[in-house]
Image: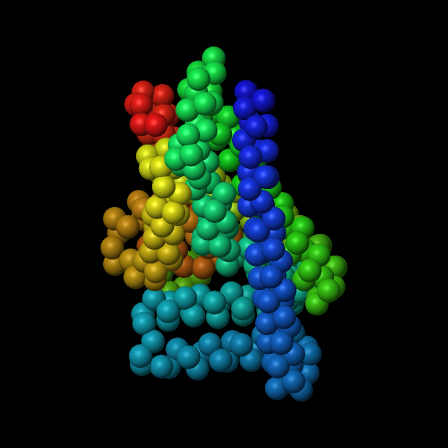
Length: 326
């Protein structure tokens, strides 16, 4: 098994996918860091002060003013009310929720990346694990060796899991190093409140507790790895089913982008909570945002993603081992 995994990792490295992913992460980190820095500078310049309490009070007032807009959708109003409650909770306890520094920026980046950006990077790596080799004929050569088919696919899947881990490692290291030039490298012990739970238009704070930022980041990376693994399993299934890498990428991009769109539209469609792409927003359960469908919980989303991943793997192994599709 180890030689199989080693062989798959070598092939991925030779395709320079990880190099391209590193450049993408670096470019976007620099772009977002600069944008965040400019936004803070503009806000402090407008307020005439760099006191975070004044800035947070201003954001609360701005959000309250937005609530008066008659054209604002009901779900957006709910999210705004919950956000206002969270910000007031931080203000009352004298905790800066937007304290930056490299780890603070990593927290913001991961919050916005778990449900779309990171899964897209996984798709880039996983889309041709089987499809490209089947199309080029190299898989036929591999299958002529005295190795059982299920072991070949198991080796490919282990290589996929290692790739997901490496993508997250790249994201953590690059985002920390590059954003540190804008915001500094301190703040790993900054307090973060988690455990907020939306309750209708109110906010349940009975389970709120304090975490140091480094532990909060570990939870974020864990959720990102779980979501990436689920997406990778789905991508592997389509890579087994089809010989065309562009087709596999197109299918997965369609699923992921439709999930990002549907998340803002399915509040009145309870059955949508069983779709895997709706459950990728795991960061919502850490930062207390509204889930796409009311009543969704962390354990529910993890279970749905695990079931989709298990079903995708079952289909992949069944087809790969039983059907001569190459």
